[in-house]
Image (cartoon, rainbow, N blue to C red):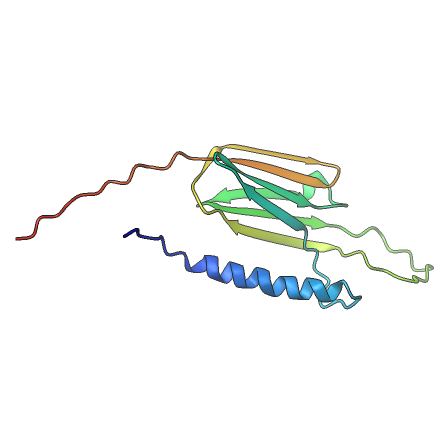
Length: 144
């Protein structure tokens, strides 16, 4: 019988992602529930690493912060609005500005010393190497 590590926050994160998708679907029909800037992020995995790609258009490199602590990857930043001209009468304004913070629990241990992050043309790419899994020690306990 295999033991599975209990991670209660993973279920909450999954529920949060599902709810966020419903609200994102509504925003595609012209309804806006929030003015929060929420970049789209893809996370993929292969045998040796995790790869994160985030679309963050219109943000400057200096306004991004990426942290990794206890296998939780956090991407946060701010997309600042340009000075608004009062004489303009906007026909339509759909761009969203503001702060964002996205946190992701990675399913296996990563090497925090070997993280590569690049930001170019509004695309953030993060490459995280996995650590070698530690051998599981099994000890047979004698019954008395």
